[in-house]
Amino acid sequence: MTTGSHRYALVVFDWDGTLVDSTAIIARALQDAARDVGEPVPGDDAARFVIGLGIDAAIHGVAPALPKARYREFSLLYREHYLAHEHDIPLFAGVTALLNELDTGGHLLAVATGKSRAGLDRALQASGLRARFQATRCGDEGFPKPHPDMLLHLMDRLGVTAQETLMIGDTTHDIELAHNAGVEAIAVAYGAHTATRLRTASPLAIVDSITELRGWLTERG
Image (tube, rainbow, N blue to C red):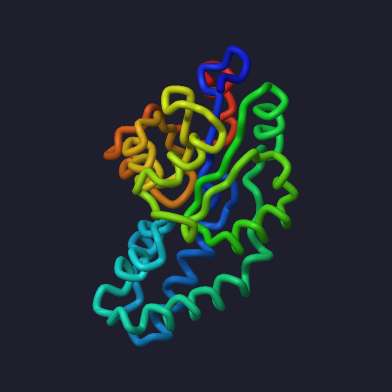
């Protein structure tokens, strides 16, 4: 399925750290959960690195010595800390205008996120963006990033080829997801991973703001 004369018929966004400014809250919730289970508290860089991964991989990344039998305990504690501040998470400035422009311009829009389905549904409701996306895929509905499952599912559902699809995300996990699905990717350097780290995953481009992303998409998307 091709939409208009755009290079990319489908633009897929990560959620946390890409569309919403949630990185600090997620990292702090991971750190608090590690403290609660008696594990060493990971530094900010370690906590930010695992954002977007599946929950088991994220827990292993921030609390490598924690027995797997206690992963559920960690997960519940993380959820408690995160939900205490979920209402404080704002959209990045310019996101609504960007999505409106892409939508009215004929692009298909989707979300590929490590969030749970319940978590994304709450976020879509709170942000008022639900109607902007033709499809979404969450971390608990298949294989987590960087496995290609999320993008393969979205492309199949919307009838779009890999060559017609663009992934946009703030972590190397997003870029690796795109590579694994044969899709081009743009990295945003205002989220969880630094530009230096993002560069190691070889994205098509790295942008520093929503304004810069909007300009890139206007010119090349």
